[in-house]
Image (cartoon, rainbow, N blue to C red; front, side):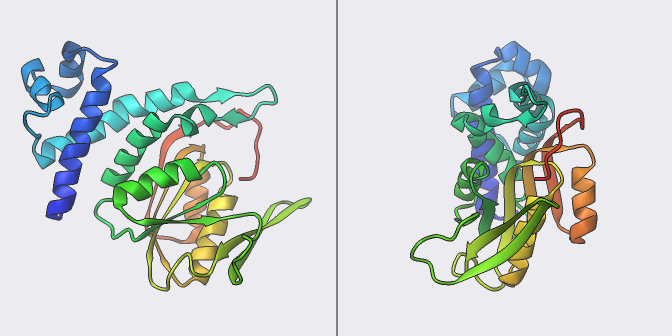
Length: 246
């Protein structure tokens, strides 16, 4: 871990603790994290930074025991039986905390750009790009006016639903290390299309992250793409809601 990554991880863990303190007492945090209330108070007040190893433990615990529950509680099933995670994607504060976890998860890989698709993936992708201090590339369903050259990818959602995604050729450079970010993965069709666009740009995908995914969708995605990089989903949802091929 580089010195910059080390310090950033330690600061992020303190910011997460401060966020948690708004909802939990020091006694509750002490029980969750296994540290005394006075020590936690010193961290939250910014009097001292936790060590890198302790910071990583904080972030891991936050993800496993708290963030997943917070996100899951924001997911609802609509009247037509589909999952709606707009309660997550519209919550800027929550997305900021998710982005810190993403940074921690992928801090050991060289991320040079974040790639996502309009529209719902953009809010998280912006926060993640900010954490890594890199630029953002966005694939769209329509060509941007004023942009002359695009990478184009056909996307088949169903026999009756075929679309195209467009990515400006100057959005990604040859050889760049790409982290793909999206809000929700159902069948993985959209993520696969983003991966193909990155391949056409001759870039290298070093990781894929999504807020939520349906059962088995990540495993199927790994098999289809044949990638060896890390693919992470914060929460996994049951296949009981109406299925859409996204």
